Image (cartoon, rainbow, N blue to C red; front, top):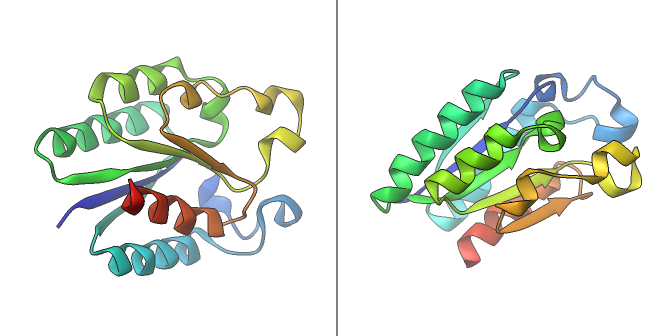
Length: 147
C-alpha cells in the first residue's frame, strides 16, 4: 500500500479561526479527516502533518523521498503556506528527492496580494491546486491517484 504525505506549513494549525473569510471555517482536524477518507478510497495510507518550521518541512520531504526511492510513496501534497513565496530550501528538497508533489493553496493566491503570486515550489511541482478551499486537499489526492 502506497503512502501519501500531506504536509502543512506555518499558521495552518489556525484553520477555522484564522481569517475565516479567506480560509473558511474548517479546522485542520477536519482537513485531516477528509484526507483520511480520500486516501482510503484510493487504497493509500496517509501521513498528515503540520509545522510552523521550514526545516521540519524539508526533513519531511526528505523522509518522503526515501519512501519514493523504495516505491512506497504515491506522492506529496504540500501546502507550504507563506514558505511557498520565500523558500528556495523547499524547492531544492523537492528537486533533490525526485518526489511527485502537488502544491496546494486553500485560497486563490493569484487573486490576493502581489507577493503571493510567485511560488518557488511550483517550479518542482507536478501540479498546483488553488482556490477550492479545503476541498482542494481531496482534489490533490485524487490527482495523485490518477498519475
